[in-house]
Length: 230
Image 1 (cartoon, rainbow, N blue to C red):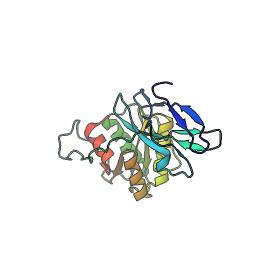
Image 2 (image 1 turned 90 degrees about the horizontal axis):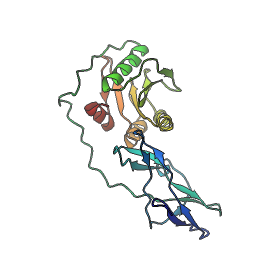
Image 3 (image 1 turned 45 degrees about the vertical axis):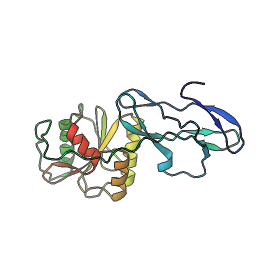
Image 4 (image 1 turned 90 degrees about the vertical axis):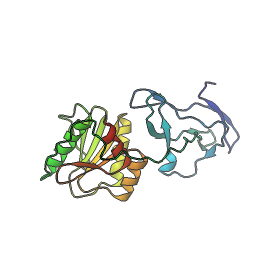
């Protein structure tokens, strides 16, 4: 038995298994392993929800806390067992740095928004201003809005008057997970409430672009990105 594996007894048929958790790649390149809660009760999966399907795990190298699939084990009796993971300690409430704090970089130079193309241009310039590189030529259409890929990030830009939805945010996050990169959103018309809540839970920065061409952070991950940069 390795250090990360543990014995698991199926509560349905009482069969015992040796379970080793999967390893996931953090954006920094380090392996991330969900910390198993040894000795905690294992429960069969009877129904699935979005919240139950993911666990929060902090990378031991860079400190980034990401969302990864909830560890599960299939028993020969047909039961699917949810493997408990140690719950991270509750962090203090995030207090964004004051907007009046000295900027760590020159002020962003906005471009007035008159067309949908202007919105995409502003978002690409803002990404570069934040510190992301290799943006040119990476623009592509998405099922909703436009996606811009840069080194280390995928950005979803919605230049229409339609607020971004929960599905938009979740699809973007899954694409970023598949590419082992981070993601963020820009919108001209804002975000539906469920989309805003999911982005906050998944630490996805959300920005609102006004007609002056100045992106404004609208959640705490965006506040943090604005304050620290890349």
